[in-house]
Length: 214
Image (cartoon, rainbow, N blue to C red; front, side):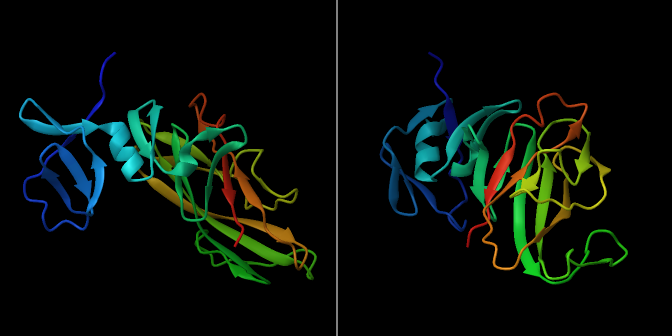
């Protein structure tokens, strides 16, 4: 079986925020033993990827780009790729993040360019605004459909801004907001988000599920 290696360069990183250092055949991260399987390959000190992933509380995912170390929410579960507010999740095509959640009676759109004010309907409801970020995780330019696919929803109520397309180069990101009307006192559960990359087969199959619970 081919062994997957994670090569580390140890020269000149003593001032880095995370201190990596070699002691005999062991690798320590911030003073904690991460791996006892350090070895030299072609002059470079190497350690199995699974050891690094475990030490950093990440998981190893095989994607269209190769291998990715992702957060715990990056696992492909039946209900979608799960996480919480602030997590950057990856489905093999797109990186998706809920940046913040705003709740109130009025919101001024910060992404439309016209400072449009949004209010709930009916007036007695609360307005929930979910600020999101999508990043192109492919190696080609894509057109991202906003605000999201048909299966994007919060509970059973959705009131999104008009649909539009945003061209994204590889690694480029776009920020936008989803708005929902909910009765006062409603406890927020999960946001289910379906990404739309036009012309990219499979990008919409693995949906994101983000917990909004405080």
